[in-house]
Image (cartoon, rainbow, N blue to C red):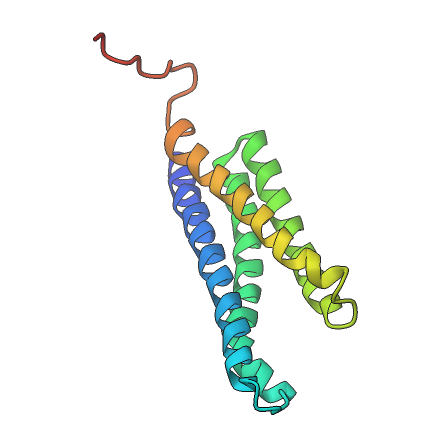
Length: 150
């Protein structure tokens, strides 16, 4: 169980980093698309759009697979909170994919919620990472270290 917790700790950290990179890829896709248009009246076709957002799309599906692995690891690491938080992360990533698919046809609704959900995912994974490195490593019943007297 201790090995699963260590693997889980590193995996959730990697997932958090992947979401940060994913947000960066979204910015790259947006600015690359804007650069391709560049006020010249040139239109963007599906191929040039996919070239700009390809890394973002690809990493999104890898994050989805990583969220499944995170949930499976949470069962080995044990702990109701780990399992529930990992399940919440997986559900949010699934919602993220649906929002991406629906964003093309409903940009003012689903498209606008897609980046907001990304930051919710980042917040959840970031808090899970913090918890695993700072709180979750303490043995059960072990009190937190007291500050040295001044």
